[in-house]
Image (cartoon, rainbow, N blue to C red):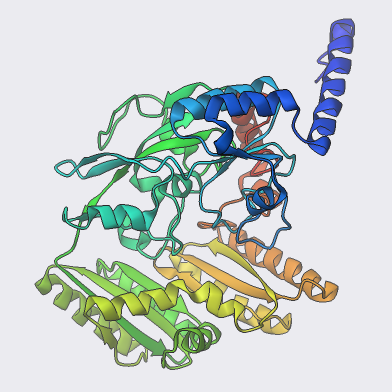
Length: 491
């Protein structure tokens, strides 16, 4: 509590002491586990079979794909519908118990770690596709629906959802983290493809960010609440439904791979393709270390060199035109001839190899952990930052393959680390901070798609400045006055 003037100390003193005592009690509560009254109330709200306090289950829900140590919640619940989510959120709010939303645990910045204990809301049992509107190109889904699950459902409709982060993540989780992926260069990120959200706030109230059952394509009505929650990483509320844009499945899809003598040549080619207004669907970069790892892991035989993976969507005629124009640019930058993947099975194998890059990288040093960091810069800065990052890795004596969605200026460095080697861990931390600050110096961002979570809070403060952080914290305080929504993340 902040005492605003000397005159009001008498009115603030006793409440302040009570607040401090309350905080201590809450800390003690987390250390000893949830009070039995809270557990019983949660059981009444969702059913005894849908709550667990066993160690194994709790630890399973306290770890994602990041290198951060497991921080398990005190309990895990599996709500069946939004009414149960609302009731249990109210119980947690009234008892000052932290809430951690949980989807598929594929995050990379420690976003689901229960830093202060509390209750993990596992939303996977809410897995209904609520409404599909083929004529309007939109669909509404619950948080248990994954990207692949939705596209399997849409298979006979002629529609698909193209945002593809690689992992088969839940769609509401993708909204919560503002996920991106290989198709973002043409179809945009989650931020551009979410129409409406149903959100349960910290105190159990339910809000529809664009109005209940609204699914318009554009609006100028008031504040953009939808985008406030997209990317909020569970710190403002629990997303229980999302309405998404869909797209027609292209008549033709063709993939190609080509290699380049240098990183600079590959990046120059990327920028020139985009400057030529070729409506390319995917353009992915893998450095020589990453290509070699993918060859070994996925049994491929691509040239071990700086490589672009590309994909073209459209009518048969337009795809031919896109390919011809791209080939001319590739040749002008000393690129190799295309290795083609035209049929669906071959294309799936190619992109599966790309999506397995994380596991291929980890296989380079068996027994070691992986740390994946990402940044995003203006397109014109891509060649410089990737070349500089490669040089930095060599100087730092680190193993870190580079892979990126270079069509929108975003790339990842997958650093392998021996967690028992303190010197190496120090070098990795210093390298990742240099990488992020290098991106900030180039007018970019410290994360293009992984999010802030636990790992990049200081970098966010450097990116948006003191005033920006104050505004974010003010918003958080209004929507989550007790700081129970995924505490310790983002702000």
